[in-house]
Image (cartoon, rainbow, N blue to C red; front, side, top):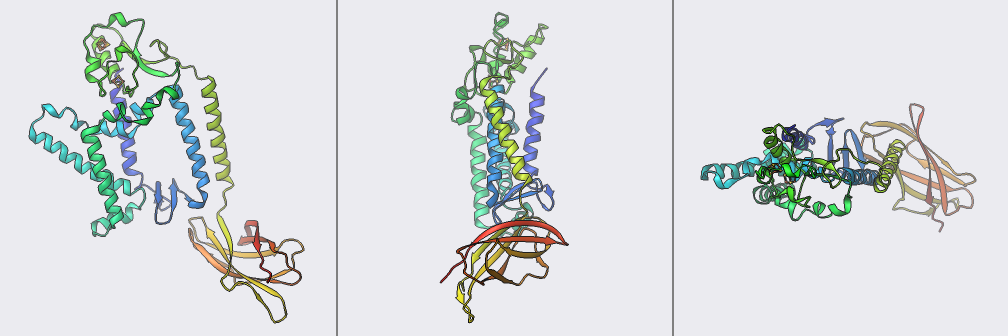
Length: 400
Ligand code: SF4
Ligand code: SF4
């Protein structure tokens, strides 16, 4: 089987995903985007606020452990199939072998790459600014210096990378390639010559000529190999003429013959457990995630003593509606047990808290006895009689 057409399809799909994700809208927002103006991460219809980044950290912990697990079992398969450096190097294949091309085709290739790099730069910016704001702003010439500067810087780096560096990056400076030895073991997946059939090699060097990092895989596994499988296809074509299978193949272990993986090993078991732990915690935290955030901060007018000698403290109660939809809320406050307090706030009626916004209300707490410094408050939010939230919050009561 020739592998490159499958690799190309996977690469085109991933590149298309990169270009369209900010434009796909779910519940009015990009499918995946970190919105810098509001500091919110949009992930397939869910918005995660800055204060909830523990969820993002858990997701990162899960993805990193999954990545390590896949690397441990399947070696550098990420490099050959999924890494943006490989995907975009393959897509910009018109930049390959410029030596044999005419001056006009070289200039055209560089011109096309510059345009694509600018497009990549702009799409990257659309991951932090809504493309539905950025495109009209770009057309009207008021994109803003930061967004415009970022587009140009990313475009220049992209152009230099895919015009001159290309797979040299994988073979030389890529840190992931450098630590492969620590991430794999003697049973991981490799691309290598079948050790039992090496005498069948006819020395045509097709496998060497197609290698983008200039390797001769017949000399054994080398860290610069990105597992792109071009040498496998080259040998498949050569050996097909002799009605034989390719001498170079994907195989597990160092002999080049084992096509079955040994999944259960100490390191893979530990990594699988870490994956499972991070994923379970992420699912649990997402399920118990509150739709509202409350904060109660002292009001500037602070503490005063009333004519009747009671102490009154003023606060600002902030309610953040983390949902997309607007909601009408009724708030009720109850002091904790035996707290001698009375309340006054202006939200006895239903109030509107718009989706994604914060509403602030003044709150006055008056002591009717000997107040303590920390007062527990039971805050209940209801809408249409249904209790939405019921939380305890402690506030500091200033006693002059
Ligand atoms: S040795 Fe084969 S799999 Fe490795 S980089 Fe070269 S062509 Fe790709
Ligand atoms: S393509 Fe196959 S037969 Fe030709 S040199 Fe490489 S391993 Fe040998």
